[in-house]
Image (cartoon, rainbow, N blue to C red; front, side):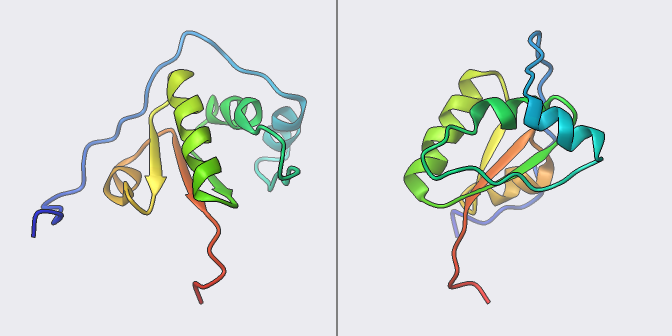
Length: 107
């Protein structure tokens, strides 16, 4: 089929001239990882950008619309982004940030 992936793409980690900062991200980095929960109306772009300065990040967000908005915002900030599950091959190959939605139908 036309959607068949013959091989995993090469990593697409991008170098950035801007370092992002966030107090929440600084705390997570000091703890060597963690989980950040935000309110449904919060814009997580600054937190995710700050975390992605230190390595790959996975973001789970409640709706497809919010996932698209976040992915677009992060791309504008200079990050390589894969949307899960559509860009699963890119995610597997390596990107700065993977953004996907929470689907409670998955068991």
